[in-house]
Structures are given as structure tokens and as C-alpha cells.
Length: 505
Image (cartoon, rainbow, N blue to C red; front, side, top):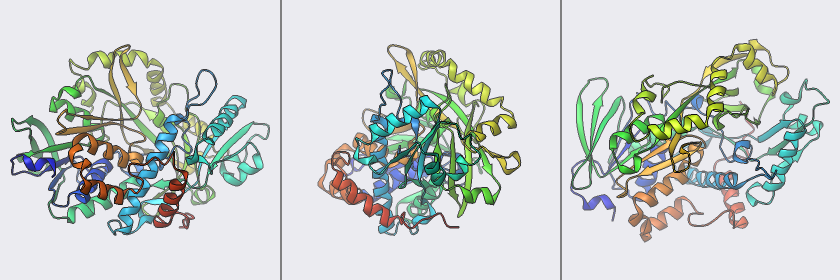
């Protein structure tokens, strides 16, 4: 009963723009739900997952809200709000279920290529921050999703959890940490490429690299004509389709503007760039096996929450610290410096100016980050690794993130940190804007997109059966069903082989 079949046309049923984790997830879901579906994927670069989904361009944390303190803000009364953390933790469990389904059905052959078991920790120092972390821990203990979290203010215990962080630290410093053994490291670049490798072999799926999507036109029959240019041959073509998904990371906003749908009016974007310090000393890398997150500086965007981070990239263990934020007018790492100026339109200039005026501390913070010297970066690193030496670290450029700016009746415009799905009223086109925790919650985001854009199909018995097969908890709350949560965590841990992974090289 797929909705597009009632519409005439000779092009693909679905066009996915951008070869990142979002398009890969949506494409995989749709082909599992409707195997006869035809899909065309267009990517402006020559490989999949080269922008935001690439391992060096994102945090790589399975963002489960175990350690990310920006997901648990402290309210004015001193209490800690855990609502966002609970929501993200539940969504990450949904992602784990879908990935486990893919492994069990040999769609992904080896889970070790994209997911590893790595403890997640939050670490703070100073009386005020320790008090906050204690309150956060107590609040999260009320939620079943975080029941295995440990908390300690004992320096000896912390030395056992993260020796590199505690070595050489002032013994008089008040410290505290939380520890979640069931944390993960996810290489979203490897996962994305594995999904596209499978999709590309399926009947009715075509992938087109080095192709720029230049324009959109809504036809009278409700379909879309998309103008595409081959960046190599300069050849232009028009493709007709019934559904378009714009999952081009930072490049989504300009494409959404070209679609000219009313729902896309008033959105703007604020680009934030990033850098990592990457350890080049194997002896130091070997001493740290955790993701240790701290508190962000005042005015810092969420993507700049500092962390000393064990990663597994291309089969090699790596150690990163950062990210250090920066500012560029590019919307993509491989974009143009004209991206930001060209995104300003009559319908979004008020929200963008208003958001800018309301976020002057952020602007000052980014300017300070851009002006940082190597010594400044080393000083920040030494807060997490007191004995760090300059010669053991080198600078690595991270990806671009474009934070969402949207209209607001009170402020004129607000800057949002998160993801936003914008879709036409008829469900014929949708775009994903924003950033973290994006990739980790991609499955939940795409399930919500299916409800918006393919609602009639989602309601059918056939789709319901398939959705529950792919995501066993579909339609149920893991938050309100501890037994189901434990059962599914045990299953996904076994299928993804997370208990066995000790990060051995």
C-alpha cells in the first residue's frame, strides 16, 4: 500500500540526499519494510560518510546520556533535570536493537567493525561541581535505564576507573565521577558505509557519488522534480520522485530553502567547527580505556563538552581530547565560505539576528577558541590529564555542525542544540537539521519521520509486524518496563558482542 504507488511517475519512489548515517538508516528501514521500493541516493562527495558521519568528524560516543552532562542541566532551584537524558538513553536502546537486527540477519557481518564496549564516565572537580554530579547521580538513580551507574568521590576508586586522569593530580582537589560499564564507542562512518554497501547490492537501489542536488520543483501531481549535476562530467539531469529526504548534514538547510515549502520558512543555521587533540604516543593510549566527559565552559555549545576519549577507528585504538570549538561560515567541512551568507533569506533574517543577539556569550566563546594557541589547548587538556606533554599530541580537524535557528514568538529567534525534522504537510519531502545527539538516535529520528511521512503505511498490519521484528520494543516504553529493558539489553549486548570487547588490539 506504499503511498507513492498511487502517484504516476517513472523515477525512483524515494530520493535520499546525502550519504550519511541518517540516509543510510532511513534507506535500510524502508527497504526492509517495502522490499519492492526503488531508491536513488545522491552524494556530492566521492565516498559515503565523509562529512558528519565520519569517525574523525564526530564524537563517536554512543550518545546514551550516561556521561554527557549537558543533557542533565541544573535548574535554578538546584535540582537536576534528567528528562532529556532519559529520552536520549531510551532512543539509544532503540538504535542498539536495530543494529542487532541487522547483525542477526547478516546485513552487517561483523559488529566489531563499528561498535565497541567502552565505559562512560563523568568527571568533575571543585565543591560546587561535585555537589552537582552527586545530585545528577541521585536523580538518574530514579530511572531504571541508569540503574547500573556507579558514583564515587574516593580518589583511589577514581584511579582504578581512569588512572591517566588521576595521575599527577593535586591530592587536595575535591573530585567526583560516575561510571557506566555498559557504555559504547560507535564508529558511525563504518556503520554508514556497511549499510550503504548492503543497500547498493539490493534490487531497485542506485547510488550516485559526485552529484550535486541543485534545485527542487513541486509538480501538480504531488511529486518532486529534482535537478542534479554530475560534478565530474558537468552533466545535468532531472529526476522525478514521490518522496525526498534531505539528510545532507550541514548542507540540509540550503536545500530545504530551495524546496520552498512553507514549513521550512524561518529556519536558519549557525555553523560551529571543531578540532581535536589526537594522541600519537602508544604508551599513553594504552593507559586510558574510557570516555571521560566533563562540564562545558560557560557559553560553550554542547558539542564542545570536553572529553578524554578512547576510540576505535579502522581497527586501531585512538585517544582524543576535545573538541575545541571554532567558527567558520562553512556549513560542511568540504563546503564553501559563502554557505552562511547565502543561507540568509528574507524569511529567516529576523530569527537569525535575534538568536545572534541572545547568544553573544557563545560568539565571544567561539572567538576565544579560534584565537587559542597550542599552549592554551594543552592547558585545557591538563585539566583532564595533568601530566600531558605537547609532543605527545597533534591537532586534528573535526567536522562542521550547523545548529538550528528557528522562529520564536517571544525572542524572534532561538538557537537550538539538537536535531529538528522539518517536513511538508503532505509528507512528500522532509529534511533533518541540527546536530548532537543525531547519529546515536538516528533510528528513533527516522521512525518518527516514517510516522510523519508514511503514516498510512505505518498503520498497516504488515508494517507493524516488520517494525516490531526490527525493533522489539516498538510501541512500548522501556522506561516503564524494566523487565523488557533488561531483556533487550541482554540480547543486544550478546548480539553486538559488547561484553567480550576489552578494546584489545
